[in-house]
Image 1 (tube, rainbow, N blue to C red):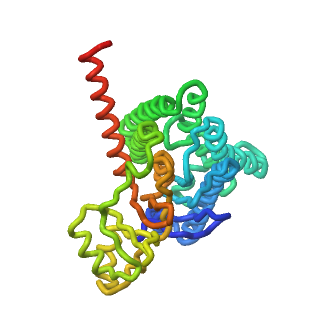
Image 2 (cartoon, rainbow, N blue to C red; image 1 turned 90 degrees about the vertical axis):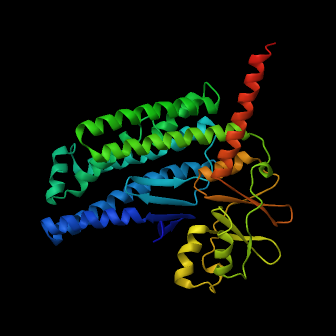
Image 3 (cartoon, helix red, strand yellow; image 1 turned 60 degrees about the vertical axis):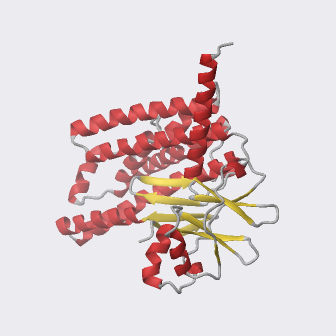
Length: 370
């Protein structure tokens, strides 16, 4: 089963549904169908669909402002916990990050205001209790949803918009990497509080959100460490060059043989003249060889949505691209021929080496103080 599949494309941004979203939507609809009948199930299905239309609008609030700063967004993925807009890069300018982060909740608050005007009064929170019985009031419940999502996203914790707003505000007074470290720690502390409250209240959803927030804050902190550590390092210093390579004319069977002798997860696929055509994943090879057979063309499983940078680029640009959602980044030479690949693991290795060298330098200063 694919992780996500496209349902629309809006101004160059693909809107994709994660398979878990489809599963949750189907389960909710089935439960309501069994307990309250077909009409209630249809209404709940429509309500959930409208909720995620609001989520898409939230994400396109970010995307629209990001485009004003020259930052494109290849795709938006809809997950059970919300949407994820994969920006090509995270701006280091705090003014840009602040504007992009605010845009999402602003959309929710604008939708809330419009729905309130249409409703003609403040929403009754008691209508939420009727959802369990299949009682739907679309305008009222959508208004409450947008208000809650807008406020929840203002929490100062990654990956919520509030975490990015908090970092942007801090970055006006300190370097970006220090602002990220502080914002990440605040996010982790908030996640711990949410987790404790969730466990004490027996709220599994809140506890799950807490775990997600904690991991996201940790990931953001690690990314900023990488960006700060590698700085102006040339991309050639962090790329991998020793992996097996395939031609577009090769078969899946050849790829299957090659992965047995390697622990790499990604493999480049080249045109006959050496230009990079795409890449294949180990998981895709193992999954497809039983279905399509070893004689099937490798092009049938090749992925072509591969960001590419030249050898002259800095590694920081690659880190930003991977942070935006790209699993790997291809590196080409001045003639457009394949030179290497960079993935998240390479960047973590670069960070580990940098931290080890910094520790060695600190140890030397301690032993031989000036």
